[in-house]
Every structure is written in C-alpha cells, then in structure tokens.
Image (tube, rainbow, N blue to C red; front, side, top):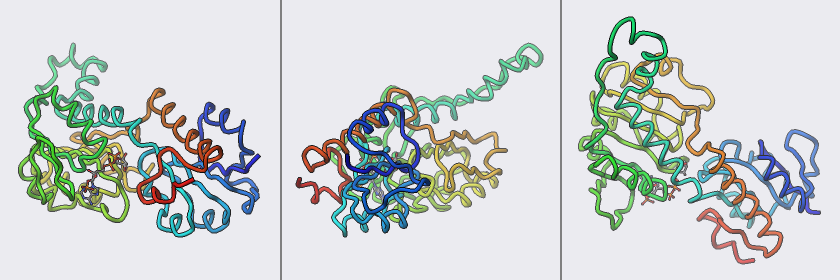
Length: 311
Ligand code: A2R
C-alpha cells in the first residue's frame, strides 16, 4: 500500500477509510520520507518546509479546511504536487458562526446569560437593555462562497448588505472598491477573505477608525487579516466599539488585553466545528486522496493547482 504522512490529527472515520488504502505514518514518529506519496494535513499545521523538502516523492497534500495559507502552494506547484482543500461543505456552518457572533455582540447574550445564571436577576433586577441586531448595515469583506452564505443568512435580519472584494460581482449589494470607504458606510464588518500575505492586516487602524466607536468588527477568516495590536488599541481607546473574533494571529494564544474586555466576544476557532460539518470535511479530504489513487485526479484542488489536475 502507498505511504501516507499524517500531519496533525484526523478523525476516526478518516483513519478507518484511509487505513484501507494507505500505510499511515504520523509526523513526529520516524517516517520513511522517500516513500511518502501522499500527505494529509489541516489548515493550521499546513506542510512544514522541512517536510516538503524531505518528502520528494509526495504527489498530493490534502488539507482539512478551506483555508490553505499554511501551505506553500508555489513550492508545491513548482514540483508538480497537488494541494487539495475542503471548499463549500463548511459554508453554512461558518456563516452561522458569523451570524451568531453578530447577534451575541448586539444582544449582549453572554452577559445576559451570566445575569440569569448568577442570581443577579433576583438580586439586582432586570439586565441592562441591549442593541437590536436588525436593520443593520453590514459590510462583508470577501464575498466568496462563505461570504455569500453570510449574506443569505443576513436577509433574515433585514440587513443592508455592502461588500469589498478586489473584483466587483454581479450581486444586489453595495460594492466598495475601497475598504475604508466601506467601513465608513456600515455598522458591522464581517471578515471572510482567505489568509496569507495578500490579506495580511487588511483590517488596519484606518479601517477600525472608519468603523468607529459604535462599529463592530467580526472575524471568522484568519487572524492575520486583522492587525491584532491595532485592534487592541482601537478597542482600548474607544475608537472601535466592539469585536467578535473566532480567529487570532497566534492561535491558540489570545492577547490577554482582549480577554479582559467586556465589549469583545471570543471563540476558540470553532467556525466549522460541528460533528456534521467536520464529518463532511473529513470525507472530502479522504475522497481527494482516494480519487488520486484511483484516477490520478483529485476532487477539490486549490485554484493554484487546478492546471496540474490532469490525471
Ligand atoms: O478579491 P476577490 O474578487 O478575489 O474576492 C475574494 C475575496 N478576497 C479579497 N478581498 C479583498 N482583498 C483581498 N486581498 C482579497 N483576497 C480575496 O475573498 C472572494 O470574494 C473571497 C474569498 O472567497 P472564496 O475563495 O470563495 O473562499 P471561501 O470559501 O469563502 O473561504 C474564505 C476563507 C478561507 O480561505 C478561510 O481562511 C476562511 O474563510 O475559513
């Protein structure tokens, strides 16, 4: 059986399917680098440069997740290696996470829940009023597969939808070629671009200032998209009102300043983390690897590798 290198964890279902067709080696153990033909990894661990260099016969790296900024796709393409990811199957889940972060921020559900649970309701009376999440102007930064799912779900809240991408799309939302202009026009920005150098610190102090003291920044994309130090300053100074974050620059580390702020909602990168969606993602990872064994082609190559997917 061909040799597969496993980087990071995989689910039991993935292991069961993969073990029928591959000899699985775990990174960290001694593994026969020259024999490795396939790699399974995830969006956080990617493929370290040393592994790429050692596994000269690897033909496919299949990543669990839609974002693949942790994989050097240029280096993979240069040696004819396919990289796959898991687009579409997580659109609705990540969109739901974004909507829940927005609702939680506006409606103060975390402090309300604590108010109920702690006995403060009986002791001190009603919880303070919150702000309505309906009828808001929402700017989606990155209107791709997930961004579109977010826009669809926002209809239920009668949102006025704006977006910023590099190229305008044929959609009934307000396009802004400039991100600061969009920040000035909306109440909330939801970040859902890919990570990597092209989007690093796209959301900088200028964007936060334009969003303003009543504005909310939501990030369900990659921590690198937001300048975290600038975010802490903007929130501390009151130049930005609120933030709701599922992703951080140095996961799993969250700046302690953010942890102490009551106008911030923090999640441990759980955008797609349900049993159902993770099972679908795992199946797609395995489908990619088995398809390559059977046909020489993969199911969902990343765009940079699509021209290599010829079988
Ligand atoms: O810029 P465009 O027209 O290529 O639109 C893409 C947009 N985007 C950007 N927008 C502004 N400035 C940039 N430098 C920039 N780079 C990309 O992000 C497109 O509308 C969107 C990405 O959409 P998809 O490729 O369909 O990705 P998907 O599946 O929605 O996932 C987005 C990200 C993943 O890469 C993970 O990092 C995260 O969500 O879970």
